Image (cartoon, helix red, strand yellow):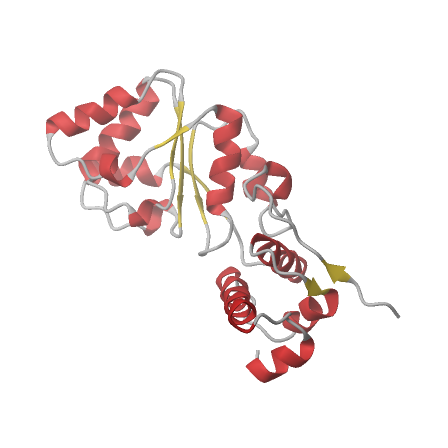
Length: 221
């Protein structure tokens, strides 16, 4: 029986058509494609595709990213600069909120300003909104009332698709039996799949050797 072969080419990895949809993330994918949700937070484990979703939403809504420097504004002038950045009926994204070291006053004013201007705001994090420890009570109340959607742990079908995608992102060509072998061996998390593909990418580049079942055996994957 002839062995299947994955021969990958470099492509734009943030296309809507390249987002992997399964039962684990169908709800969040539908949310990102909805025109009715104004301000919402999508949570999920590391490497679960949150940033990919922000780029899909960015293209659909002509959205702009709000960066770490803007979220850490420390005086009234800097906060006002951010609020002036927010335009009426426009769309904005804060990716990986937990990494932004944000000023709570900034987030509070931002949420209010977005609502007043009838704008949209899409946030992502590894935490749901009630998973943040917020000292500002008014912010805590408003933040906890955000629409929350969660990416669930990957099912077996998604794990397989993730291997194919991550190998593709690294432009690594592998036989299909390599993916089937890895399915039985690795930790079934988004990060687990990502880490294994990185290990194999490093090995392949250093040894200039294709990834095969015998190679996986020597690496004790």
